Length: 169
Image 1 (tube, rainbow, N blue to C red):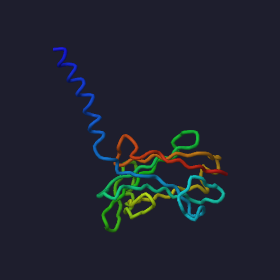
Image 2 (cartoon, rainbow, N blue to C red):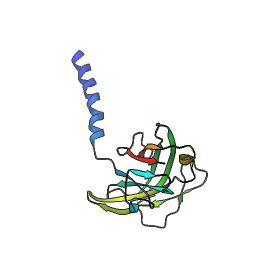
Image 3 (cartoon, rainbow, N blue to C red):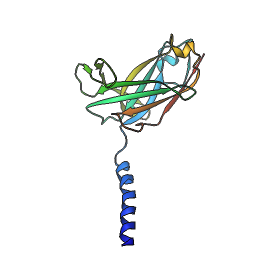
Image 4 (spheres, one colour):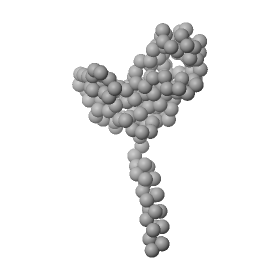
């Protein structure tokens, strides 16, 4: 009787590890850029006096298809949640419309994924503007290293390793 109980407990511990290992996540990278700095290329250091908006770009594996929800959570240099932005994304090549998103009183415009290529391969991308000028970032001097976590389809864990960037005065 005792051997059976141990075998079942051991098997129960292994099953979740096997299911977690199946298939890589669909998110690949998070990039931060500014049209006002670095010629619009991805970077990790920005100046609040030069940057009007940052562009937060999530890269996905090319096999991602259909409709999804992308949530970007931005954390201040002291680790507090500054903003959570949920954006409906789609791989379908149609005129984007609005989609209902929990917590939003009106439909949110879908972002159609576009192709992106860099030295590491081909991806699909969705970009979201993040205002800097005229926000609490400047008025409250929220300077330092920020963190972005990305979640896909309301998953409990981020779909990719967090990205960091720095905003200086």
